[in-house]
Length: 113
Length: 414
Image (cartoon, rainbow over all chains, first blue to last red; front, side):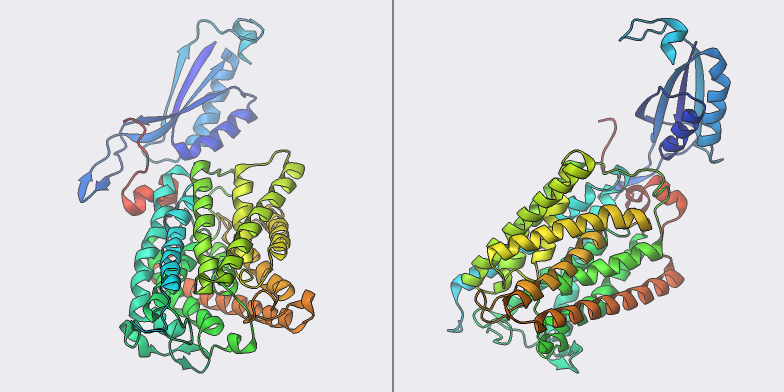
């Protein structure tokens, strides 16, 4: 089992969710984050003072998948989230030790989907 | 002070002026602001706020003169009142016999302010700020000022035909609503619309805005009596009744069709009612007002949920669906429900024995639609060629607050 964390451009979220649905990956967690990477931030002005942005808004998506779904998930995310510009984001794949469905108390692979 | 001046009238119209100003900012600013995405909320609010500032100046310099000044061929006012020359503290009996002329001027200013602000709902989240500013200034000058003159100015040709528009159904709502549709079509849809849903980011703002609009509308309609008198009272009651009836009808239809009554439905329904009663407010009984509200609620509901979905134009905040359609319903309803028994200075409508009023109302609506459409279209095309209408795709994606104003409405940390 793996936990995939993807940090993507906020406006790409809808496309990524659709792409994952197409691969039958339906269970996701999403939240707003701030991040910085190679992309420069967006400058803001407050009463004449320019502040260069350091952190940019991104969206973080977390999905837990069984091993056969890892590669399809990565490809779906990349295809949907890629714009070719700096700031597209990153995908991290972590080993997932345990997964429990709270309602039924099922564990492991069965609990993931 | 001129002996004709009535201090009660002055007090009420001063208050009404402030009430109508409130409708643009914060009313419309919040109503529209809540409906857009968080990355665009400031730019949306800025449009209303900026127009309050811009038209406040345009009006005093030349807008008032073009709208209400001495008549030129029944089409426009002359610039005789440029920079308020000739507009003093004595009443102008053509317009309002018991309040200073300057008070009438500043009261009308607030109508001129909010009308272009209504159009912003059509091009929300995608227009370039400088283009928006120039478009609005030109629209105010070339559409609002003439149409205002036709309906309310001395010598205005629609006024001489007998068209009734108590507080601006045609002048404000039909003109801006129609222009909004043209803008939506010429600018094109937002990226991702209608495939991706673009829900309101803060419905509490929208409800706040709607309530402020309702509150301010008492100044819009009851103030159009231009005096603290019985007509003001009857317009006040009509305004409240129509808003309530339209909101209820919208909520009920929504409950049946969509399963639950929603805050957005209630808010939009109320605004639709307020729009529709605007031309009729000083001419109808409370029960006619309720009927107008029911009609507006139902027709605007269909316009926004069925017609827009079918044709898929991106009138983002339903400026056409509510103001254009609602204003038309109201203008025509005035032709049905107006009663001389309520306001002797008005006329009787179809339901009270006079068929001709409805015809005149229809002419006024049709002409306003045609003129607004033509001029708005030309303005947009010229501005597109000269400076471009839409932000770039990248700017649209990042958001207008950051790209047009270098500001962020909400911080994510601290």
